[in-house]
Length: 294
Image (cartoon, rainbow, N blue to C red; front, side, top):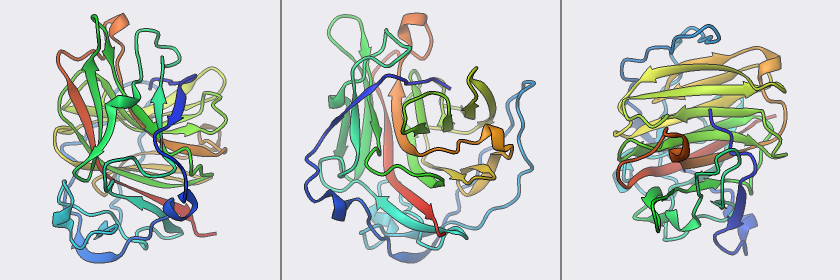
């Protein structure tokens, strides 16, 4: 639920050959996603509206360039091309090599609305098939964090899945959709820890006065989970490990403008919230994105 309006992004790698590197097809395998939501309970509050919790299709696995799920740090490979009716897999990465993929950009500088924070590009790194976004003490008494956006591939509607976990409490760890126009709101947070490791929230910000709908769940964020959002002109569905845990169906609350996938760790130590006691990190195994078929 924290705006990062005003944050700047800097390329972390040359974009030569990006046109061929941005879209990566995944090969479907016959593995089923069996993880489930751990004791999900909606957050309380007058503005919370959580739709009924229907079952969603089983998420089948794919390799995203690797021969088996055991090649992935989380032991679960990305979903296949035919995961969702009406959508086609258009991007997949499991972060090979030692640099961020083409089309991704690291955040740099002081986050808008948070003068006590600092986004340091050096805190975003790829190694061992994982993207790591670290929060560490900098010189003096301050803390610095990191963030990354898939700014090279904006979308108007789509489905986004992030396989991640955290190593400890303290910062606000968020998977979100951010407007390409950088005029906030709207914002769609489909996993926001709010400094916790046993609970998380989703939220959709809309309107000029920053109205909001949101929900929450009890879930162990120290373990791997697959966070997802399916965004159409008619509905936003929030998913975790293949099960729906929230939805928004009012057109006035749904963004109708291009947005990008952002993943970030952010501190708010200056006001005494979302502040770690020691170095922690958010680890991302893979990202998969789907475009509407028509």
